[in-house]
Image 1 (cartoon, rainbow, N blue to C red):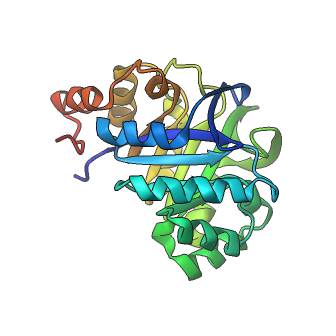
Image 2: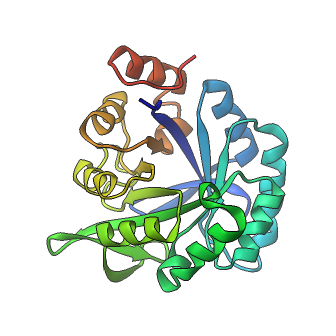
Length: 252
């Protein structure tokens, strides 16, 4: 069985790391390069960087952040936020990102996924899927969780796999930043719908939450932000705990 991955998320605004709760109440908490280096020392497997206020004006800031991070990291890292053209994805990969992810732009134009895959490869294209439980189904939201789409999350996940995306970064909007556990129902639904890797995101508050999502669903990785930012969970300690409880991780 492939080792389960532990992923750290760093939300970036104007070149600084920030964090919110339920996609709101954003506060600044530090420098991305400093956090990235510390996470690698602790044993994180991958890092995801999200430009939460992406725009053409700020694109240059994010590109420079990616270049600085690429100089100091040896682990894989993924970059996204506002990417809407294959040329922009190529730019991030050239700056040093191992993978890029797309969200809103892909919902508006699904062909963007297959176009990107044809140029940078499936393994380098991740689809970020933000979902919320509405009227008995999990619905896809875009624009930083502000806009409902009417699209069912499992149907969209199946489509993006068909289009060639190599991975899905799945965030439950209702558990994001709450630290009360991952949304097991959503993660089970999506990880059993597709055969590509799924990263569970939203809700990690304690070590047991990671163990639960790995035991109860088919996700390949689990992501957290605030519990790593504030030192509530140490990554090597988490990996040791998971391995002790029968979950195969990249623990050294």
